[in-house]
Image 1 (cartoon, rainbow, N blue to C red):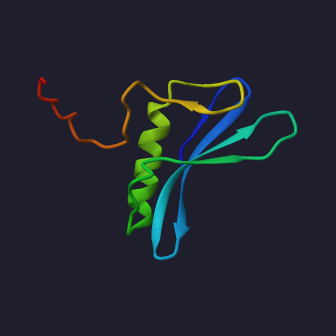
Image 2 (image 1 turned 90 degrees about the vertical axis):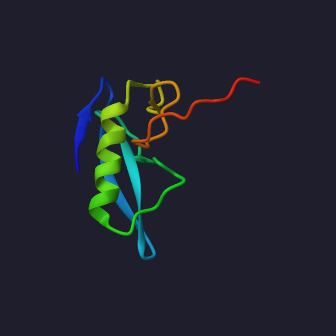
Length: 93
């Protein structure tokens, strides 16, 4: 689990078990005020058979977070997918 501090929030990466598979998640928790942690699934169109792979994907997503909105919602770079794949070229129409 990795962790980053932002002005009003602490953000952690984790893996959550869903049956026999794991989902990569980012958990945003308010600092110094009342509130509950909010879980954001990252790489939502993927699930992982091994917890370590999901944790690695979550840590990479946490590293890609540019900032947080006022309510703690993570802001990612434009076009961020969570995959290591190079973007595919779109043919000219």
